[in-house]
Amino acid sequence: MVYYSQVNKKEILIEEFGVEELTKRVIVCPIEWDRVFPNDWIDRLRKEFKVEILKTGDRHLSKLENNYRIKDTLFLFINRGIAEATDRFYILAKNPKVKEIIFLGTSASLIDDLDTGDINIPKFVLPWEELSSEYVNAFEFLPVGNNALVDKLTKETNRFAQNYSLKVKNDNNATVELFYGETTELLEFFKQMNISTIDMELSALYRLSAAFDKKAAGILEVGDRPLHKEEFFSQKHKNKKNKRNESREVIFRVVKSLLQN
Image (cartoon, rainbow, N blue to C red):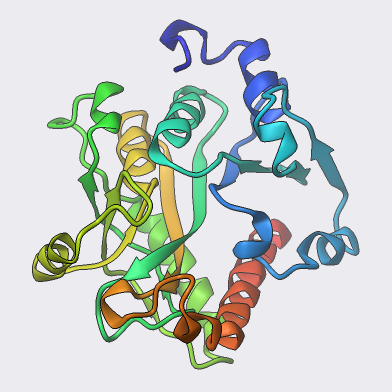
């Protein structure tokens, strides 16, 4: 865990992100970039923008994915799971330079109306985790996204998604701590509480961003549907590769439009 008093020090930023200073807009991702973007996303952006590759000092992160600076936006790989992600969310949320944090990730759908490849941009996240409350008062700061940013991203996502058979929603999401650690009973319980999707990080970002007055929003591609026997490794999931590719193209175009404006 990062020492609270040191989160703005250059040494911490270099170690965790590969930069000495952060930027106004940060895009974070807990999984490999080509699981939220098309495989050639960096090559396509290089045709229009200068792309700077950033190397972190973290010995685990440095072996996984690169971080990037494109114009005034940082693309930061935060690694999967609530523990490491929350530590890095805290650094970002506490930094005075950062004003906007956009999360790109995958989720599991619990409902019929969100299929693999569809996109959820939630305004509220149920925190089925306790870690974020170790950083800020859980009763004072709710895990809600910034309405203006959520609405902006939803409008842009719908603009590109209309070319495909993809749904874009603002349904409730729940953040859980363990990958595939949920029972069917728990998933059904979430569904009864009007939770449409689950992920592993977003509630922490929303809570910390609310605490430090940052604009935050998450774009979640539906990666699988555990209550429909479409787990990530199932044949049903593999059969929907085209929809997942379409979803990644849409998310890429949304991000590219942000860089152009």
